[in-house]
Image (cartoon, rainbow, N blue to C red; front, side, top):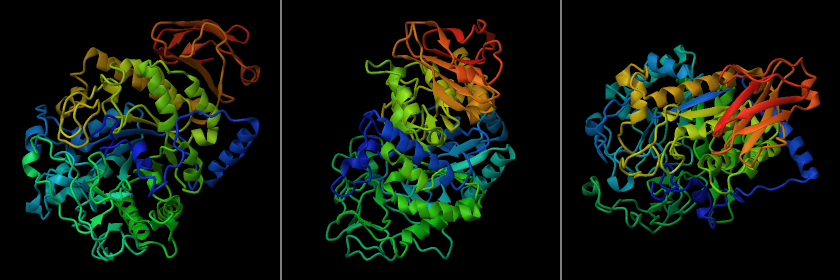
Length: 619
């Protein structure tokens, strides 16, 4: 990660999707500008969005999906040395075996039902496993000492760092899958389809599999039969400035032998990518000639499509229950439309989550692309982040826009989150500074739709992401490139007891709040299956206060979020008559605290919501 809005590869993902516009127009029109829709367009969107539910290859889940993302490398690590750029022996590394039944029970306390194991697949690294027949990678094309989990070295192998017995690493992962399933939890892993490590080589592939690039014609910059794109006559040159002084500088000589140069993962058709490009990766060829008007060659089916289908089936056959698909928009939607139904023919319960950043393409990737869920990054997350940070432009209109732009069908297919490995930690100095300042946003994320919500490990105990770990630097994030101990998480982990014994009082209180909130979100019929409508706050409100109702014939919930840091929302909210008619009115109770509120009078509910807090009121 180089600039201060980095991602896995060292570059802003939204920027990277448009950075090489001359060669790739994958993300036409990405914008966070909110557009007001006229009545005609609203009708069109409602009709087209309603088709989403009909076109899904799997029915929406009967329960709300709660995903917990963790990196095994970090999750089970008990060492606290935290030496910048430290080796695996200095800083330690979590193993598959560290994710015990007790650890999984701790996730279930948060109502988690899917565990996203990040960084499982073998990726480029500087740790020496040559004794096991695995070549050490070149330090000039590896980010950090442990390496990026998104620079895949072998699609058919798991990271040897994560095994107690390296020779039995696959068996140890298979045991983790069984252990996870035994707790009635599902397993997600990353599928990284757009690019591979510059030194990709599969040591573990089945005998019938041909490695990527093995049969390529290196004299052609593009061929529908090639797995990669090439720059004939040019040799790859390490990015200028890559050799900044650090503890691994002695391993770098500024050279990497690749001739002809392959095109870099974020569509950089230059033999010398920049330091903030994904220079450690190479772009896979799905049959699109980016240098000639993006002409598509999809008939016959490109070899990369077939190879990727086989890789997905390989992991599904091992018991993996779903895939988080990295930078899904950088791969042709036609591939997803073909591969997802293919794989679901034999594994119908699989779910596919697309990392997406272009709201204009959401409908296409859900309908044509057949994804089950997409990231809701550009939209709700960005708007909530402004509110959490108390920025001058923060406004609940971003939440309102989510309701206006997204019908129930689309909303139920958007993955909501406040943290993941790409984003800043809430409690970091660069974000909120205090984890508690995000609680109203967490309530909105968990309850706005019946769609999935995600936690990033340590979020529920206020992990601040402090420290210069190595390649990532002091960037308000938890490193994905280095060996490291995660302090607040380690307090909950308690040397493998996973009992929270060493958590601070604030950490225990925060985790208890997450437990209550997610219990409500997963057990409330109105949230999982109900309709949603905004209700106006007629008096006493400002642009940092928002209220909406989730309801069915059996349950009604008034959800009020106050992001204002100074003012209490003390008013009465009028409930629409058609919602009041659904069932007799009962006493109002805040489900987050269990406290009974003022009696409902007529069509109004009196509320008093303190600064930076929220209520979920059953009535």
